[in-house]
Image (cartoon, rainbow, N blue to C red; front, side, top):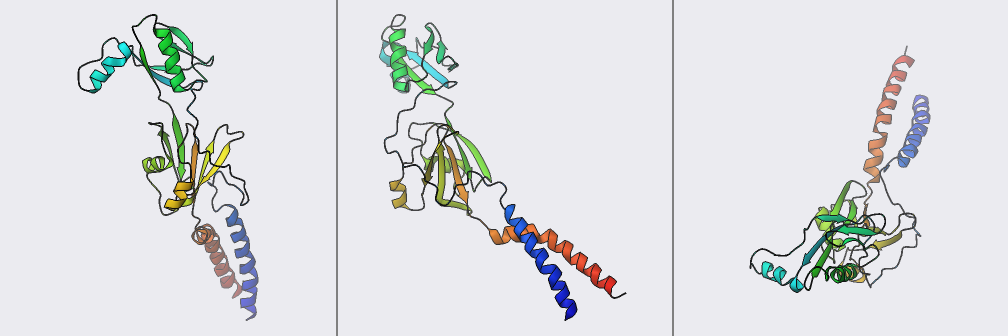
Length: 254
């Protein structure tokens, strides 16, 4: 009995220490943690139009005659004539983009519609009834699922790119993802807006503004498995302790 008490006096404190230490390292890859009383930002129902930023890459297409050739092409009427090159054009640090024929044009800070109108006005002196289409090709969102177990960078390919679309493109929700705890960070990372989304039911989805913006960061929280992770963390210590106790019992008999 005395020997058992002695063993317990050694084993119990050791196990408690290992457990406390393992709690600190159960999820070292956890990101974007918020306190339980964190004040999340309110949803913005009215989505602002996208504004062209520095270093955006633009696909600029210019057609003549109000784009009649574009319509003919979409209907299978042949190749487009009198169209400028559709190479990507970078918005430089001075807020301008360098385009064929008209040179540098300031576009940073403009919406896509405003940029199209400005370019049409400038191309009027070179083309008859110019029709301009502008597309920002490098808009993207970053998504982490199951905590940070899975990460993806997704291209925004339409103006109404939703959270549901992003999750679907990234592979959906696995068994460890919390559908009711999805954080979206928006804006300058020094002082971002942080939204909390819940898509676990139809009613919750209706209450949420799910249209994403360029450079949004989506973080789907992970369902913790404390028991499994704790056992996994302390297993090496338990094995070491068993070995030590075995050696102790063997040497004590001599």
